Length: 245
Image 1 (cartoon, rainbow, N blue to C red):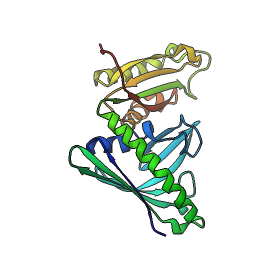
Image 2 (cartoon, rainbow, N blue to C red):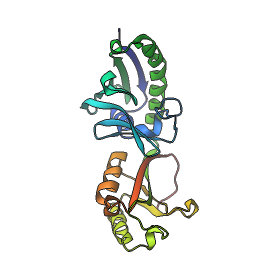
Image 3 (cartoon, rainbow, N blue to C red):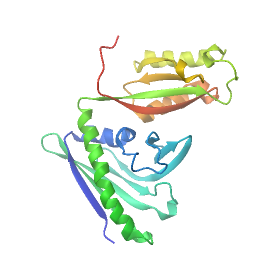
Image 4 (cartoon, rainbow, N blue to C red):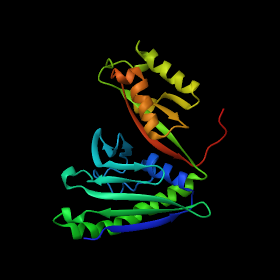
């Protein structure tokens, strides 16, 4: 069976398109209509060579990276939430054009591996244009917008119950981690969320992508490593802001 081919010209340069396509995929992918879990608030990102959707603490793997060639494109073994043995192949190509425009192409092949390959291919022929349109809109906004990272902390399994995290002795380690982010110039704000009523706290980071924010939060914050706090990271597309102090 022939591959499904779809393309779009994006009104942004190739570097911006690549950044939006890979580093900020969770900000624009239409999870409300194209998801494994049906959860439009799920976390969707490239993580450790995989494309992953996370909902209610459970990871659902969409595919594994077979080739990664920034900023020219990548290839995925594609099996959204299904058996990797039945994976098709998705290739994405990013080609600079004149006038700070970029051609993005999707080539989706391997339909002969599926019993209902013809029907699946027909469905993807309709689905990929919606994905590319969402990417184009997000990349175009990136010329004026900025993606920050919204980091949410909640008490972890090793947090003593009945006492707010910031009232426990080990919390000094988390405060030291935040001080490090502040010294690095990436922390915008941090503090508790009283309305949540469950000891939740949030921090806002700028100047780092989602993968870097996850790495810092899970590897450098020793209270997360010790499971005193649990953490989630979500990209936040900031389209309006006042002056920062």
